[in-house]
Amino acid sequence: MRKKGLRSISKWLPETEEHEIRQYTKRLVRKVHYKVKPISEEDLKAMKASLPDVVKCKPFKKVTPNCHVEGDVFVFECPDKPTIHYDVRKGTIKTPIKDWNAFNTPIKNNQAHFVVRQVKDCGDYLEIDYIEFHYLPRKLRHGHRADFNLWES
Image (tube, rainbow, N blue to C red):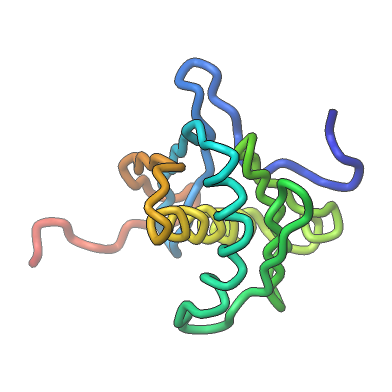
């Protein structure tokens, strides 16, 4: 059952049992597939306890997000960016409807990729094998010109 007021960013791929989000740059886009591996209850509790502290202590370039845990959901809040709800057990990424309508697709997807990256880094820090990433090749975004020469170095 879907929670009221949330929209899903990640797309479930049943044939590979992975989730897919897209990562955008100014001209390029690439699909990122991630798969949540089985995790023990002890490791899950350790991750829930330490993720907010790990995120708080990381040196980010622009802004440090506010991260807190609500049950099995990590909530990442940043000023001027959409709020992301990451479900630890299912691996789903959702954002509130008000943020869904306020921000465009690249910002939502980039913020979702940022959140999954932080959860992966926390798992690596705790030596928990939790998420597996697959980056697909980059492609030119629709409506953007490719004014770069691939043969020039």
